[in-house]
Length: 135
Image (cartoon, rainbow, N blue to C red; front, side):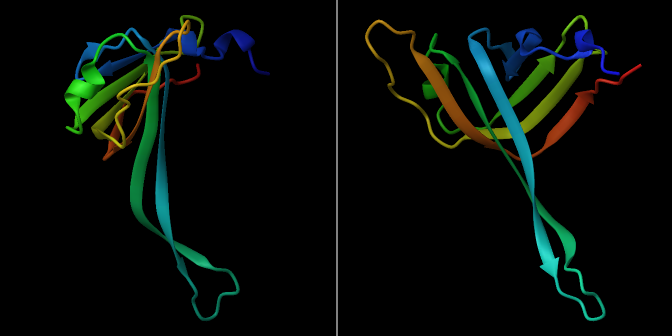
C-alpha cells in the first residue's frame, strides 16, 4: 500500500542553469520521445518496431527576476533538476545536456500582475545522476 508521505512534492524541487540555482523558477518539465520505425515483416501479423532517434524537449517557467534568458540568447546551456522531499524515499537529480531555447520571451506583462517568464527548450541528452529508490 502506498504511504502518502513518500509522494514527492514539487515544493522541494530546484533548477540549476549552468550551476546557478534559479530561485525564481516554479515549473520545469522535460520529456524524451523516441522515433519508432514501423517494420512490416513477412510472417508476422503484428507491426514490429525499431528504436530510432530520441528527442528531448521541455519548458522552464517562473517569475521574471532578471534578463538572463534574453542575455543568454540561443546559446546552449545545462540544466540540473533536483527533487529532494524530506519525507520521500530519496533524492533525485537529473542533468539535461546541451539545452537550447526554442523561443525567447522578450515581453509578457499585465498591469498589477506578477510578470511570468516561460522558455520552451530542447535538449540533446540526459543523465540520471541520483535516482530515487524505494526502500
